[in-house]
Amino acid sequence: MRSKVGIMTFLDSRDEMLMKRKAIVDAEEKGLTSALGGDLELISFEPIRTKEKVAEIARKMLLSEVDLIIMHLPIWASPNLLTMTVNYINSPIIIFGNMRPDSSSLVAVFAGSGSLDQIGIDHIRLVGNPDDIKIKGKILSVAKAASAIRRLKGQTFGYIGGRPLGMYTTTTDPAQWQRLFGVDIEHIDQFEIVRRAEEVKEDDVEKYLNWFKKNVGKIVYDENIFSEGKLRKQIRSYLGTKSIIAEHKLDFIGIKCQTELSDNYILQCIAIALLNDPYDADGPKEPIVCACEADADGALTMQILKMLSDGKPTSLMDVRAVDRESGIMTLGNCGGMPTYFTSYSDNPQKNLKDVHLKPHVFGKAGGGATQYICGPSKVTLARLMRKKGKYWMGIITGEFTSRPSDDLGGVISVFPHAFFRADLDYDEFLMTYSSNHIHAVEGNIIAELTEFCRLLNIDYKVYSN
Image (cartoon, rainbow, N blue to C red; front, top):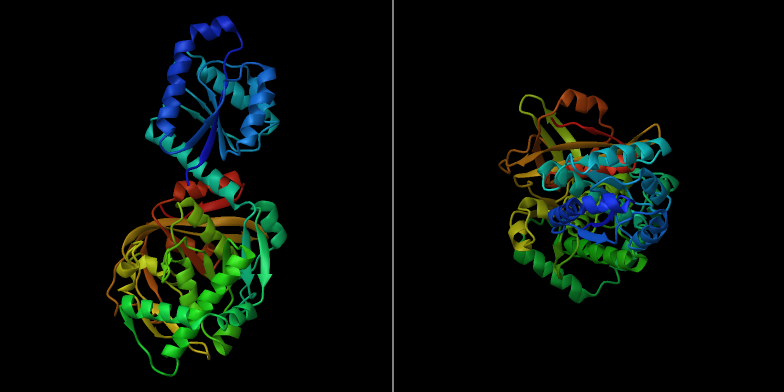
């Protein structure tokens, strides 16, 4: 989904000065729209030159529901036009001008930005050529972050279960979420998964069972912890959870699992993996963020990563080990890691061939785990955390590296694994990072994440150099 950006052009109210600089205006407007039009959905109206025009154009822009507004100052314009405009709009603002000495644009940028500073309106100031890679990159990252913030408002998180295993880091404050992110929380009992799982049609279970048999690299039963019957129950759990999501119109969810379901019904690992994947036995689908252990802040982080990466699958992992000498961080968790991360393909056959379904190592009810190693790729890790009730985000960019499947560094062998390398101070990370969970998305979206935090006034720390 392309971000929607409104361009509000402000021009000199003096007719004679506007006519002298008309060619500059035309060239700068064309340059801005040409540079951004291929990446963004641009909305623009006639330029603003008078107080009377402010209300008319600003109201039109407000109705357009843009993610970001660029206040374009190709030549001199009265600064009070900008201050009047902000009374009508509620989108993040970039003030953009050029360095042409004959345009007086830079003068207008300083005067306009200074006016907004005086009245306390946050904004970004950019001056230069919109084709410049740094300027264009900045605009695109701010636009994507602003779009994610706008789309996040009104979403609903399905909190299925509650706090698992005494972990404070998985809980959240519903009022704080609503105030800061605009996200509602729907509390749902885990019994709903059980009830709906038992209502799933046998034909649907058979379809998914055959899909697994056809596509995964190996299914290892032991007829005790993990049998075909238990795999069928895990499939039922997945389909039952999908029906919960559809009925309650949930945008992302978390499932507690331990210990009620893991001990008394079936482990939810396979269901959580499939929810986060971009496919299942019914074909391609949008990944549905689902956090293992009902990790609310983890699920929100994953949803943000998904939105900033144009809908890519995201994962939840434990920080299992850190090797200072090699610079490798070992990550793994039984649930929350989609099979997409084996080969980063939208083709399930390509990814699933490297996945082995094996008997799990905990949970009295039993079930299978999805064993694999994340394939090599550049990735971004992030996590929303709180200190004394205030949110901050930890961010790291680096790469997942390959490793033989028999070299897991002592981590539980049936877990999905990732081996992450980055240039960072691991001592600082170990002393300041505030969660057992961390979350990954393919690619480098550090610029988008930092802009997201800045727009919401959330502190952040980028650990990687």
